[in-house]
Amino acid sequence: MGMTDDETLGIGDLAERIGVTPRVLRHYEQQQLISPGRMENGYRFYDRRQAIRAANIKTLFDLGLSADDIRPQISEGCLDTPLGGRPACQEELAPIHARLDTLDELISRLERSRDRLQKHADSITASLERSR
Image (cartoon, rainbow, N blue to C red; front, top):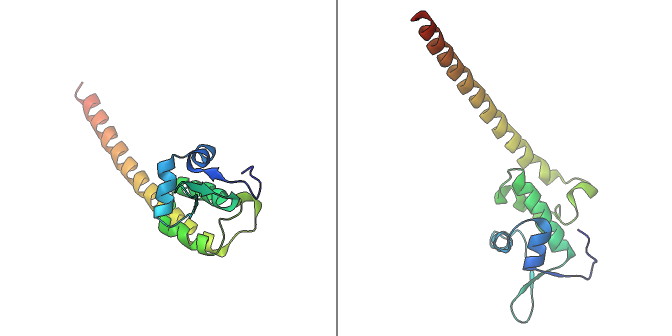
């Protein structure tokens, strides 16, 4: 993340660093995925741990996980260090396998639909060729 332990970022700076909008960070907060500090003027600020967590959450959302999938990982501290640079947490595995199962089922359905559509196209092509 490139931050020192005592450095903090405002919502706009963090959003820019991790490739989201400030609105997305507020959504993460509403979903109780992150909890930024507040300055006296009410502005949000993010310490290094919250910034890393926000970046990890974005990655997991990009992979297709939901807030409900992600929340248990937060309670176990699984997302407070960079994803690639730490030991894995058991809580990470179940939602990933569930998502993979869902994707496998979708792929299977799509392949069946494609096969049926191809057969239909072949039938139309054959019919047109016979009528020439």
